[in-house]
Amino acid sequence: MHELSELYKTQMKVVALQEIRWAGNGVISKNDFQLFYSGTQQSRKAGMRFYVKKEIAKYIIGFEAVNEKICKLRIKGKYRNITIILGDLNAKLGREEIYSNISGKYTLHNVTSPNGELLVEFIIANNMVIMSTQFQHKEIHKGTWRAAEHNTVNQIDHVIINASKKDLTEDVRTMREPNLDSDLPC
Image (cartoon, rainbow, N blue to C red; front, side):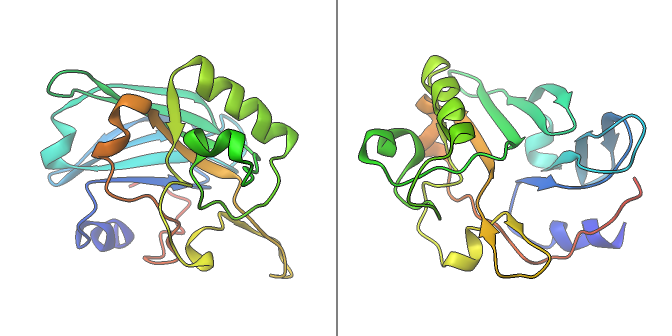
């Protein structure tokens, strides 16, 4: 529970967390926040969760744990609802001009991988946008996966929202702190 108090100290109202290693899926409600999580049924690997502060949690209208690598959160908006998809997609997005309106120009990679191309097709078909590559950050805040030898860094996990809500997003970045490496639900 200590690691969650670290999140509460930040100004972030919705935080997407990956590789949480929790079993099952569901919702945990506390006084100051709610956790919406999606993990595997048998083994304790992979997994995602959304940490949502209380002032936003009251607007949550849906959570779908698609599987241990994809989950979706729906938030009631003033005129239209907001859908946030969190995905451990193994999809590299490149700097090709053709994808710039979908993936932005601040991706870690130069060339889009085959999984990235599939992701772009999904984004186009569903009128969404990839937010994890829309904001300029230091390289250290772009990588979402690091090899054990620490020489290889990839940006393969992504945050996706409705294209019409792109301007409402203040920032999306990879953070090294706070350390939330916990494998037990609260």
